[in-house]
Amino acid sequence: MGLNEAAVPAMQNGAEQRIGLFGGAFDPPHQAHAALARAAVAQFELDRLHIVPTGYAWHKARSLSAPEHRLAMARLAFQDIPRLVVDERELQRAGPTFTIDTLEALQKEHPQARLYLFMGDDQFAAFQQWHRWQDILDLAIICIAGRAHSARAASQFDAYPGFAGRFSVLELPLLPVSATQIRQLIASRAASAEDLARLVSEPVARYISLHRLYGAR
Ligand code: ATP
Image 1: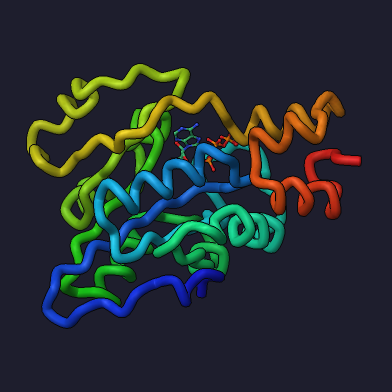
Image 2: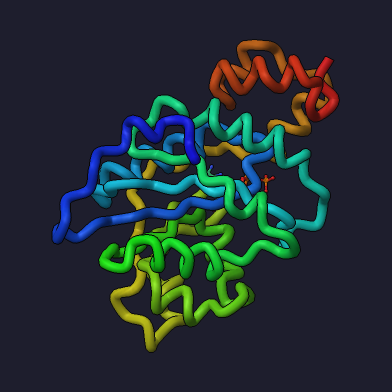
């Protein structure tokens, strides 16, 4: 499974496990993703956080970079964060990627665990279009991080009157970074090495340049 599996402590029998899921295209994984993952582990005292690069993302209009590149970059981007595992299962799944399938699999693997699903509030805005979203809410607590361009307000939970207590806010400073911005910056050749270093980790920057992703020279 993930690169830093060794960093995951053995879970105690009987104690409630807390397992997180943080999915994304990670094309490329950037500093806000890493900050979100760190904050998630700390704030929710997770035993393990599964970083899950999405396979065929039904809700993304553009085609994504090859799965092997996104997987390799995710491993590099998250390698220093304890309790993380980079989980390939959605990349290996044929057909569309649905979060509910991954949550159900995690639930089977850890029947006693409490599950947490992390996302930015741009993703949460369209949550009622997700496949079997009610089942997702039955299985996991949804933890939402604000993004620089979107309003952060608890009122976003008002649309879910039957699901009180199934939401939480991830405390994270607003980080104005997006993968779109990074791809555009690289493609425009306007990115200096320093620019890129602020947006992605150094190993990811090196990987992008080595494999000439996003039009990198
Ligand atoms: P793109 O610009 O290609 O849409 P992205 O930067 O949104 O990509 P994704 O891989 O699609 O990155 O995001 C994975 C998850 O991380 C999503 O839940 C998204 O909301 C969240 N996320 C991404 N960037 C931020 C950010 N700056 N602050 C908080 N959450 C973020």
